[in-house]
Image (cartoon, rainbow, N blue to C red; front, top):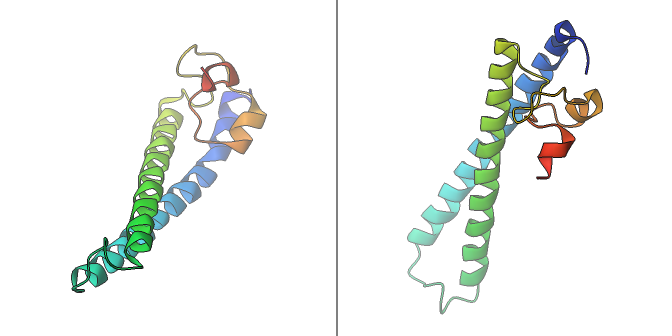
Length: 118
């Protein structure tokens, strides 16, 4: 693990990732509202509309992606809180250092490699 003072190097990247996650959520939310509004203004039903299944599938996919963006934002916010608390870069399960390569690849991670898969 890098020295504690070096952990602050991740702050700008975490803020950028948080902004991306929030923007992704906002875009997906807007798209979902738009598709839902168009669907609600239509007098066709999914069961008999040849595109109904497609619309329902798109809405479902947007919901999954929206939840993923929300989860990512929460993980990033938690990483920023750990950074402020001085615990960033340590596994939240065992307290061992998280490898720099792992932090570089996934700076919001809360787990060392041993606890990431378990």
